[in-house]
Image 1: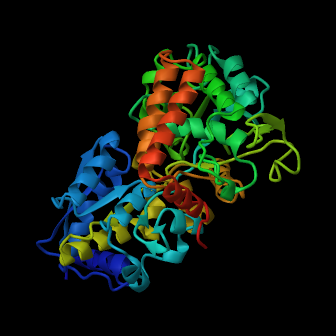
Image 2: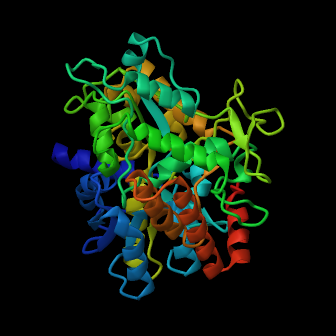
Length: 490
């Protein structure tokens, strides 16, 4: 037998033998259409691993990409209309409720229970629950773990005698102090780089800032609505303060910051142009890419900055942190790490053909298994961030990817601090959350930073838009869904 056939056989055994979930050639002639967003993040690892999967199983994986702003609607329309041209998808777990409630998603527990190779319990509990379950049933397989955090140029901060920002006031002050300085490339750098483009992913950043002022008593308190009456937590001094911070940072960013997507700000940071940035876990891995990064071993990663004042939900006023209103404060600072998005996850169309469902599940399992995922989370272009216990405990893949031990511990430590926080903000997961955030909130923020409307008009636009949606869908229904979403199952 030829050596390459032996190697191929071992690869099949390694990938699927433990679960008995597939055999060589089992899916010959089967095509699986999987939809996700254009990327290249998220789509890249699916496309890169698809040929190997086809060699191992016979299944052809056809990755369909659409702009992020269209993904929710196109997927929902395809499945709800009965077109069913899409067999599976990798999308935001927050949208799971809309798809599951409509009976469009395949329940995956029976498959997961038989799948030893997936190592389901090796996925961190938060992602096993928030990114995979709805109403106690498992519909998705996590492929990514998402928290927003702050990155800073550790060398630039040290040279200028600055410490990483503990509060959002510190963030603004540091951005102002460093804006226009030479960061080592011979030209003036930017104090802060934050994506603020409409119809991209900018609306998550305002919650990363406002959360510190709005949520202080733990995850179950919530940061979007008052759990007593479904009142939007927008018309208060905390959210207005966040708008001030959001607007102020624009002064210390690139001239066209309000038109920059996340990919643009990441490139600016890794090319050495930015002192600070808010992002998911991607900058940590992009910073070690020898082809594009000029900041290897010059990047610090921290939990989101916090605030020394939080709102009183009865009055809407900011009040100084105390043991009573900020029980989880650190050195008087309330931190509220934000699980923005939650992490890209894969689900299957309940109406797909049975053999296609089998192949789709096997591919999603393959992508999430420790062997593949431990490599993919270390590659910046994948957009996949750590979500398994082994991703945090085994430094080997990170070191092999080119990250120093110190950088790996710093980066993973910041993510773990968010993951373990008792005051972590869960992203909005109620019916039609996409309209609340991606339509109403995004439009108002875009108009605000462009100068089209002022701060008070921005607050009113969000409050009115959210209240209108809540009334249309049903206030009691939405309140019940919101309260239920804040109790992460364990």
